[in-house]
Image (tube, rainbow, N blue to C red; front, side, top):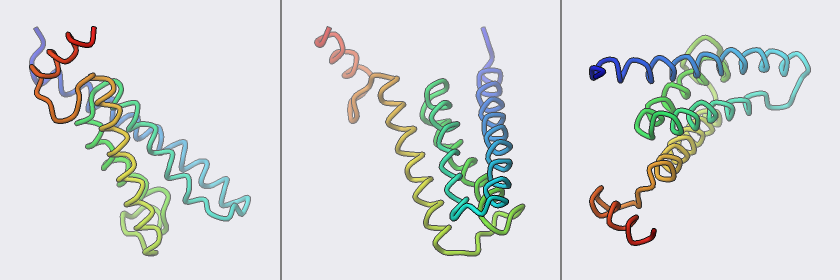
Length: 135
């Protein structure tokens, strides 16, 4: 039997790795977008929704919510000016990041409900009874 510690380390490590891999790809795409004079390269921050959704699929919505905050910090550090700092100068970028975080949390919770098969507002016993009635 695996210990509680082993059960937590693997998902957290894979979540951090997914966010770092996304950061690497997005930072490279951001530098190309800046070089090509793309109008709003900060839109690449939406790419941070992908690791959150995959984490919700594989490890559940609770870890995905935590990962969405990690993705927000990574977006603040790598995408929004000034780079390599979590400080965001433009208030429009702060609002954009807040909306992306809200979208990531909503998506992770929706994926968690779909994967778990639990209806909102029901306990585990009620959800099991509801599933037996449906099948």
